[in-house]
Amino acid sequence: MGRGRQANGVDVPASEMKKWSAFSLQFSVLANLLIKAFSCRFDSNYHYVVPEFSEETDFKLNFNKALEEYKEAKAAGIDTRPVILGPVSFLVLGKPSKDAKPGFQAISLLHKILPVYKQLLSDLKAADAEWVQIDEPILVLDSAAYLESQFVTAYAELAPVSPKIMLTTYFSRLDSNVNFVARLPVAGLHIDLDRAPGQLDEVLAAVKPTNIILSLGLVSGRNIWKTDFATAIKHGQKAIDALGQERVIVATSSSLLHTPVTLASENKLTPEQKDWFSFALEKAGEVAIISAALSGSQDPNHAAAIEANKISIAKRRQFETTSDDGVRTRVASITPAQLERKNPFAVRKEVQRQHLELPKFPTTTIGSFPVSPVGRNENLY
Image (cartoon, rainbow, N blue to C red):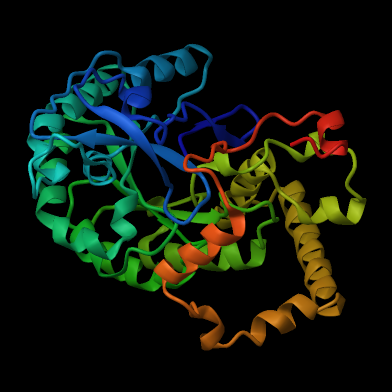
């Protein structure tokens, strides 16, 4: 996501915004907002800093980071697709500050923040950016159904002043939200077919009557495993059959920031282990190969890569069927009763207090300290 086309035909991440750290990191917005709490990024273990809002919160574009990074990449000969977090998701993923009035909802600030987005996007358009990727991950939540009018309002204002918008979702499926999303004035829609492959038919039906280009997240942005080319090409061909080749894009399911950079740095894996893995750079190559296959490429190198992938996937599947299945057996034997707590929280809290005998203000760390080889060996951490 947010990729630039390289000379060798491989898409690599470029102009990737730090969109989950704080709003000021992607827009450098000057605002009277507080940033205090951390929260998990949907179903991942990655965290983002949660902004706090009140009725008094104002926004101002202090520095257009997306524009500057786009121009920097362009000067290096790379035409990127800048990535920003969408206005609705940004507000909804925040929370009321302590001085907000009872019942305050951050989405009520939409009218205040849209001018900032319009300025940012119009600057990108003036710099000749063809596309901009706007992430609206809350569209995969059921609660997004109640925000239809806000999405309609936001994108009716943004689309006329923006480069072509690739509205991006990930980590789950759109479900019924696709019905109003397909009516938004966006040029493209990205869906995650790694975490939610079953949504493809419903999405195809919704966008077919429109001119929306469909970006297929066929290569996982979350795991470290090779993509099964046969399955990915099958999904891609279904989309092409429904929409036409000119309306289908192959992509990673989400940003590749979750994955290691490249297998080229791994020197301690066995050849068998290494053959199963695919890190960020390799996944970018997978996108290029799947795209070439769906474009009807006759390049023998692409054909060889697809055949090698077929063999690799088969070997891994064979290993999974012949390896120790003790873990799978234990997971299969889990009963609903085992998923229920035996005692309520108040009881568990008191038992824990008596057992641990912690002081009133125990201190721990958020995350981990840097671990040195000596410290790891001596269990000092």
